[in-house]
Image 1: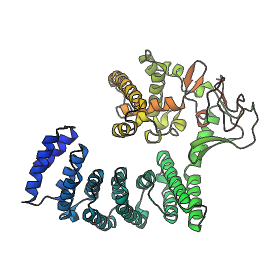
Image 2: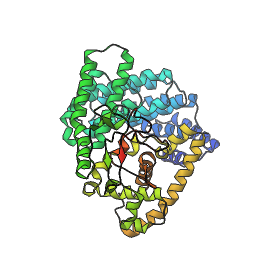
Image 3: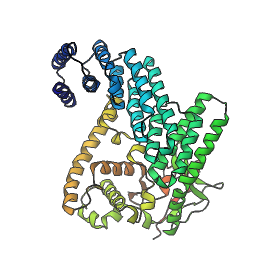
Image 4: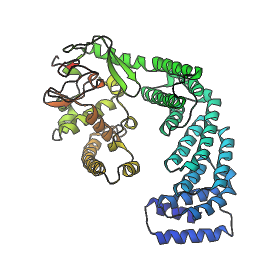
Length: 458
């Protein structure tokens, strides 16, 4: 209805006139006494009011009572919106929450994998505002979603598997070991459909959920937990090790010999470089020739670099990374670039959604610093984007989001070499520490021991 659209639009525009919303609420409640409001409209209305913080628990309770009447017609997203809005104002609408749980149980049994994954994420957001008394309803909902997902697991493909696992891992929701074992087996069964990004995300979430189960059970090791860990290990070995091996093989082909090291995926550390033998100070395990470095000097030698010769080294390096990423499998550095973390995996404020950043960093100096950095990068990107458009480059490969991602990669992975910072394949998998010699080291290597090094070899 028109009134629903008006309130929703006003809240999205962040209009903060409390008197206006009070009049809206009074008018709606007057009409609710004369005519039935569909749950779809109510879910939009309460979400809008909660968004601008212009509704209290008593008012929300009246909306909740009205919503119950047409609740069987609600979609999972509408159910989640209703629960989120009520929980956000500490409304304890027992009848509504109970009805939502029952409705979710009926819906989950007939949902397809995409629907189950999306529903899980929608309800997961309720944990952000839920109070202790709300948790029992959410736990029941996620039990229904989990059981329905396991029942229809043969239909799940990588995107749905990872989406579901991400939600359960993010909000630390219970996922039994025996069922995680089945998920890992499904990942193996669909291995040909997994790319590197979904593989890493899926395995990472599996490990987090298994760790949560281990903490919950204490020192006790059950047969199901052992079987689940074995299944996760098999999935990692089958899905991930070939990718890491291909990176090491590519580096060897490009003149970067290694001795006694492996590239592995370590729980909690992601891709890492580990030694297979005992080390002593001065051992050199990996030499990466400068021809494999993505450096400002290299980027300046390209046509793109010549076009943007006036920008600073960090920006130039980020542009060079974007250019190589845009080439995909045709590019020289693709075996390396495909291993780089995505924006979701780079947990830095620069890449956080604005609402999340404001909530988590409110009042801190980091919030101001991040805001200033974003403003600077956005202004810089606007100038660059105009030139990119004139050059006729693929607009999907050259976006502000990819620009921020490339900058984040440079900030977190570029290493000093010579007089500039460079992206050095393989070397950035090692833990690095800044000392008097900017030594890159692995584990407990001696402070002055060059265990891993880059070279000037061509």
